[in-house]
Length: 277
Image (cartoon, rainbow, N blue to C red):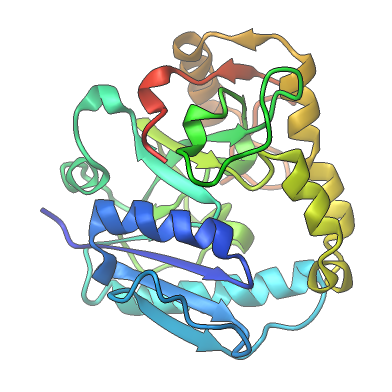
């Protein structure tokens, strides 16, 4: 099988990092995880002793400029890793790249049998909270046993897996100068805004307020409103059509990003995904 690394950068976000290290450590081997801490003032996590953890100088500034500097650093580090690894997965700490359980293969085994020329993407699944049906998240239980609704999102259809040296765009949303390919059995689950209580708590974080995150966080709570008030479609047909649309339609400002005509497609996540994360 191929040797695969996963890379991310976090700042004071142990809630997601614990889940990230548990999932990717199980799928790829903890020794193949590379975690960059945004600021040397953060404590070194003690729950992933085999992972490669690097405290870095804080990336100061507003959200747009800091995102660009972070992704430049992660692109450089991932390109270095590709001298040792066959593939590198670049994702945020609140993102889980998963194989459809129907395939019957883990992430490493599945990616190993793909012929990846440049990169591969999972279909973006932005998990929300149905405020009329779902309680606050219990971090001791698997996320997808508690959350059943999501928006199929172009924003999270990212070229997360790359096989060649290249530069990601901000937030891993594209690879500069390269096209993307959405695999039919890969899904990128985004959990950053799947709990209203956690969103509200982020408003109180001074680091994020100073970095211009307030407007960004308010915007992302939109997913919760959408899954609460929109009809949920069946997973199989909706994901198939979303994948087709995103593969064909491109925004006029970025030919190498997916688009979906602004459609809001809410789906119910099948039970077969419930124990993944």
